[in-house]
Image 1 (tube, rainbow, N blue to C red):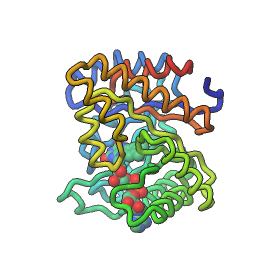
Image 2 (image 1 turned 90 degrees about the horizontal axis):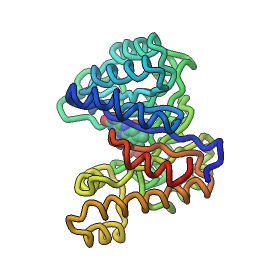
Image 3 (image 1 turned 120 degrees about the vertical axis):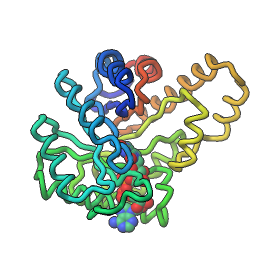
Length: 279
Ligand code: FAD
């Protein structure tokens, strides 16, 4: 059973269609909100491509009384555009942000004045003072573009030193990678919480593709087990729930400060894991 102080949060992405948005706002978010996570975050598409839909979902959730944290990256935006968005969020009562460099699509870098996420964090602090709680991204299996393991931790420290309050990790299935990373971060003087990002296993083909790009490793034994189920989606689903429940249980029992679920806008996997954990 999780100790009370361990934080649980959930993530959505802004759907591409009106029907998807309606479903998120009227079914998915209310259902997951009954589980009582501390907040929901909403991603921001590469290069600002979801600016309006992120703002729309964030505003609707906030109006429904749900605590929400927009992700914010600068993409090809200049500082003025980032400042305008910060002001809009402040006026809508938003108190928390996830600040990222983002994955910038080629050809959109034009007006950008900010390059790394630590610069965005510094800019948010300069512009909005302490209004926002700021989360940043961390990579227990190391960001794919990092020059080295140690330099990536150094740049995480730079984001936290620039004023971020805490970090949320990229998802992982190797629990040792996370706890080793926490140890290395502590050794570098990082004393702010690093929450574990957790991706329930649902669409395995998509997960494999995405994991290759973001540098998250799916252990061979998981791949082999799932391959053995063939087209038996029920068994894959059941196995995925068991594996991720066990991962979360180990994290919570071993002192992780909390868990951030990448829900993929689905209720069932996250809800089942929540229930299994007795959260
Ligand atoms: P940075 O911290 O800027 O790091 C990027 C790379 O540059 C790293 O390799 C780092 O080692 C290096 N680096 C960092 N600072 C410096 C510096 N000062 N000098 C030189 N090198 C440096 N993407 C989206 O597009 N939208 C989202 O909503 C989104 N949400 C996410 C949420 C979480 C919790 C996580 C973990 C990731 C998310 N991503 C999202 C993906 C993220 O944008 C990518 O991983 C991106 O490539 C890196 O973003 P960052 O903020 O970690 O970048």
